[in-house]
Length: 137
Image (tube, rainbow, N blue to C red):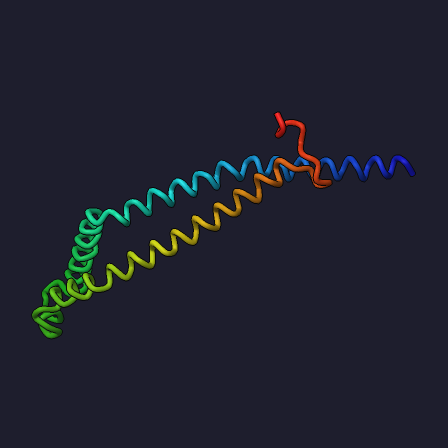
């Protein structure tokens, strides 16, 4: 009977060790994610980065139109100012896209912060609520 209790206790300790090791591997990854989100957020907030993206998408659209309609026959039938209209529509939608991206990044930052806090608390505490001897040093 005591061997069964010892085996159960050992397997529980092994499970705790695996969980703690998993947490130790996860915390740096979460920190990296938070730093990358901060970089992305700064890039979005800096409006000088938006113009190259606008130019890229506009030029990609022009290239796609040249591939799909190399002679310009269909583009001529649609509208003479199609490209200008698309640029105007893009300039109207870009601010909305940016604000949506910022909100999404902020939501991810909040989620990552709470996950990091929770995992750090789990790492520092044993299941019975006593602090780990290493965390108190």
